[in-house]
Each structure stands twice: as structure tokens, then as C-alpha cells.
Length: 275
Image (tube, rainbow, N blue to C red):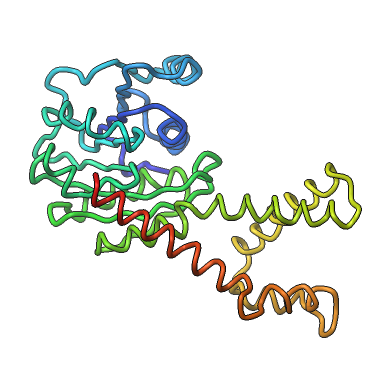
């Protein structure tokens, strides 16, 4: 719950999937509709209908003279250059801006918003189910109170962690930002392998999906680390051990994942340099 934040004002720039997920989480967490303003020149119809009915103000442009306590920028990365210049007038002395756009550096945001309080954050898509994890990196102007406010708002879509070095955001992007796609591809691979062994596509896909979902829940709910959980379900000389002998070979999953995450990390660095 966000009872401690009942006096803050929040402006959400962009009401797409991520923005809509955050907005729903804020309202469920106790933020009052009158405290939130959404700015989106062409908001989705379902978003508009759902949240205006609750009393949230959705506008096509920033209100004149409006300077919120927290400004959440949730537009697509390719829209940042177009959107940022129009936000400068919204930055007050107490405003902290939070960007969730991948590849947009704090320095790029500062070019448009000046030497103000800025947080670069990297959420991931399970945020749509309030099961995401977001990592934030503040610039030097962010106060302890602003950081607390941002943490509580981001917690509406899942867990929150912080790093002090912006360079680590590229690694975060490679692991958790892109990570859901790796898991989805694992489900594809498991289902395809099951089909190859004679299962129907429907059953193979259901087995892969539910196995990954259940194992993920165990990782989330149980205190044991991943290695311990793996060992607990691996009987000596059993079927799981036979499969793991392949997956844990020299050019197995560890090597493949290391190369995949390195590729994502390097691409994130490239995107940041070109922003």
C-alpha cells in the first residue's frame, strides 16, 4: 500500500501496456485518482474508458503550469526525442523524472530536462501481471525522499532494486529486461522437443507452459537458490540427470546463456551510445 504517498502528485506520460500496468497498480495500492494525471496524445480506448471512469484525468498535452512530484515517462524508446522537449516546463524544484524507456541514458534526458532529479529505470514485461522486477539508477540530484517515492510507485508492478552505476543498467537489460523472451523461447524449445517424442502439440505446449510457470513460482516462493532446487529434483542416474548431462556440458546452456546475455548487453550499450 502507498498510504505514505497520499500527498504526492504523479504524472504518467504514455498510457500503453507498461504505463497502464503502473497506473492500475498505483490505484490498487492506494493512490487516489485525483493525484494522477495521464498525458497521451492518442491513448488506447480501453485505457481511457477504464481509468476515466475511476476519475483519472487523461489529457492530450501537459496541463499549463503543472509540475508534479513524480513524472513517469513510459513512452517507446523511439518516441523519446519527440516527447522529452515538451516536458521541460513540467520540471519543478521537487520533481523527480523516471524514464522506463530502454536505451535512453540519463545524460540524454538531462539535455532536455536540465540538471534535475532523474531516475533511469528498467522494468520487464511480467509487470503487466504485477510480477515484474524493476531496477532503478538515480542521478546525483535525486533525494532520499524522491527515491523512496519512486520505489513505492515502481513496487506497484513488482519487485524493485537499485544500482548506483548507470553502466549496470545495460547488464540489467540483458538479464531481466530481455529475460522473459529467453524463458518464452525455452517453452517453445521444450514443446517442440516433446512433439518430436510423440506428444500432441496441444499437450506438449501445455506441459512446457505449466512446468515453467510452476518452476518459476518455486523460485519466487521458496528460499532455496536455483542450484539447490535443481539438485533436489535430480535423482542419480535418473531421467533428469540424463537431460542435465547434455544441458550442462561444455557447450551447454551455461555457455549459450552467457553468449546470449553478452550479445544483449553489447546491443544495449550500442543503443545507449546512439540515443
